[in-house]
Length: 330
Image 1 (cartoon, rainbow, N blue to C red):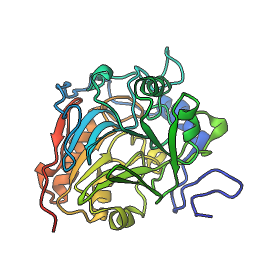
Image 2 (image 1 turned 180 degrees about the horizontal axis):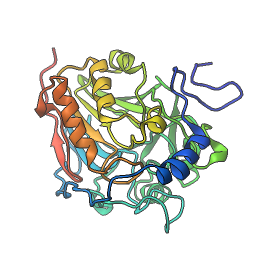
Image 3 (image 1 turned 30 degrees about the vertical axis):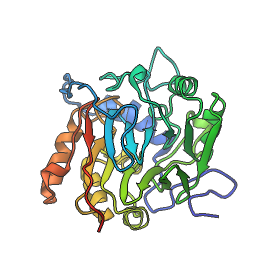
């Protein structure tokens, strides 16, 4: 049994300091800290305006990599001749109900109707801002032959909504679609769409490799000791889609969400010199206490402090497409 499998069923973070604060910590945050500590005046966030996407249609060439940010953790990736969606989320709210819960501040950067043919859809875990009921149903109806990749236990959710080709992977498992090898990578997070099913399903990131080309979707994670191992086993990467938001208050969020400084440390751990980093998990839903537009500013500052080339930090607008130019293999 792997160390991230709990005895008796379910999953856990196997590293020291990886245990989330739990329901008691949540109550302390929401009903004590927010009420008793002074908070800065609320202001409208300054967020990048969506731009028209420019991904290849219907598909990019087999040696191309394009990255289009839809918003939050949703990307359209074109890798190895495949069209891949990560954590697809097109709904107005990240919530079990349509009338309450975090609402989008920016619309999806790609209209659902404008998506190209989708070959693969990957899910990192089962939280509402990453696994959305209505979006799953829409994708299943429009792309019935798409392959869904999920961490252990999450496959039932998409099967129940009509998906027919579902592969569930444990950490470090690999599967192949066409010419692309896809690996489930460790993450430090938690799962559960209600308190009664906490940590019954797994969480992960996803690495994609086609010949000598590679990209890593980190998923939702706190900073943990396995980044160097991920870089060694699944890298080196040309691009890393890195979460940088939903980090305050730090005492509560540290185990499950990196702040921008953690994200830069994680990138350095990977030893993927020359890779570009695309900040994600910011600017779409107000999930925590930091200003919605703070993460990219702090990411730029941490990136610069680490002496990394500014052109390798791609802070994208919703809908923006960037092409990862191919360099010849060594």
